[in-house]
Length: 368
Image 1 (tube, one colour):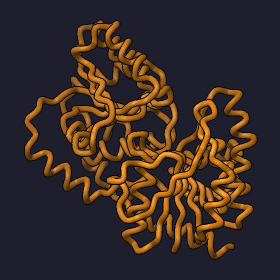
Image 2: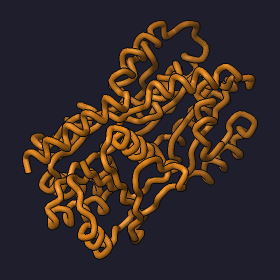
Image 3: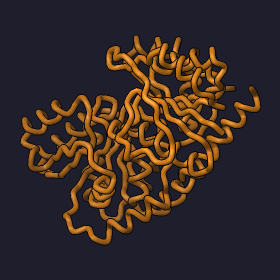
Image 4: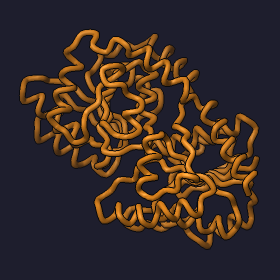
């Protein structure tokens, strides 16, 4: 099968969606399919393994990429694909869907999050974008049942939906954790945050909770992995509250260093306001680490409260502070952590996920 993957950005430094597209493309290629990725911002060449990457021009509008219609039309004329898999971004995705429809290219669209924004923007997204996606997509992939139900209530057509989760290379990840763990000599630290430094990831909420704990004499440590628009603001908050000794902004780190961070952390915190099904949670589970996560669709389907982690309401600063203190001071509080993680993770291996994606492609081709 000749497959086109379309995503605005591909550099894994940007976050989970980019890693998702790279991993899916790698797995589909290993299964014998011809995969090309079309993107506005390709990754370093060393990241690409066995599949093609084509760059397309775009404009930046209020932080959103606007794909060049002329270049996209020329690209589709010069290259013939059986199916397109669009990883949606507002405006970028709508343009891609419209041009694909004109070229009669069947398109599967993945919505990587709930896309919750401020009320006026959300109203437009729900009333326009979700209906546009429903109409022009052959199928729409949602990352979890709860996310699908939420989007259907807001306007997505149920008949177009299929639930396929995010994935991880479970065998490779377990092997890497074992090998890295053999030589670990660095001291543990308390809390780890991994993600893009932006409002929806809840990193400022996490810092505020840590400040509350420090004022009570609970000098917990935190490492923040990732970069983004809030980096300078976070640095100011850390300095203003005398947290420099306890909180480290690491920026983007290579994969091996990231896996080391998971192993050295006592707890992984995912305080997002909305998510899809974050790879960070799956990686933390594979490392055998408890998770403190927001009570939102996607995360509350992975984290069993009191089992393999704790669930906190989004933006509840005091609640998050209490749960951080609770999990770091309790002995053997999460007795079923490893049992739950093992049962959950097997469903997210990339080979399992990729076969479900291929079944969706084939269904779309049969229907067309």
